[in-house]
Amino acid sequence: MSATIPLPALSAAPSRPAGRVFSGVQPSGLPHIGNYLGAFRNYIAMQESNDAIYCIVDYHALTSTHDGELIRRNAHEMALGLLSLGLDPQKAVLFRQSDRPEHTDLAYLLSTVVPVSWVERTPSFKEKKRGQPDDVNHALLTYPVLQTADIAMYHARYVPVGRDQAAHLELAREIVRAWNSRYGDFFIEPEAVFTDSPVVKGTDGTQKMSKSTGNVVEVFAEEATIRKQIMSMVTDTQRIVRSDPGRPEVCNVCQLHRFFGDDYESVWEGERTARTGCVDTKRLLGDRILDFFAEARERRRDIESRPGYVEEVLRAGAERLAPMARETMREVRARMGLGRS
Image (cartoon, rainbow, N blue to C red; front, side, top):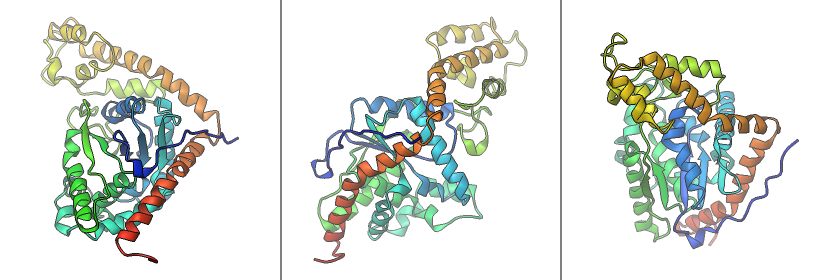
């Protein structure tokens, strides 16, 4: 049975509230601890004091996969994960990008003021070009323009990002300035909110934790799977035998103890003095991660027992944004001379 989600009104676009936050999240399926530490915990904190909008960016996912069923399933899983981790649809808007078609309309109109050289220089395009040389599609090149449209559509002022994303947000600011200079001041130049979030290394100890590289520790997998993922983590490569002193500053497992538990200094000291071994430290991390996410895992089971709830949240979120999106497009089209006068 579908749930009905009662939602408070969102302030209209013309008021341009000072604290509006927007962020998009790739539909990569089941969340992992890198997602949580790098972004999701900040989303949940920001919903308490900001006008917050969070978007499952399934249009963007099409730049790297063409499996429609996979995108649909992953978008659902990511929304389910966010809700389970504490995102509250009473406090923040959660919606699916493709449920608001105005995004692609605005992206095209913004693209008319964007030189090709701007999008060719973006770090994401260069990285993806190397990573998928056989599928360097047009959408991959224009990804930053759609990203700008996502933000500008709702007149968001703040975008929480890691410092590795600063160049992408600066391009969004350039695009907004270019459009405003031609058609008059309308869009807000978004500002980066550099969150105190680590770049979480994966189980391989070298690359950023990512589903695409398979080096993740999942939040909602079975307990045995989570423990197996943690036990596979690379630690201090110079610590060969148990009696060798460890270097917690370079050990990925030790670094994660900073976020799960309040006595990481004690854990680190055990490694430095060889009082504890890598296996001990991994087992303790597994216990703490499972304990930390126990409430979220229980909330997920509750949500899964309510068929249709996740889709209803996404639908309600998109509907809640409809008046704002339509008003933005009405003004943009009028200023650009489109449609009837």
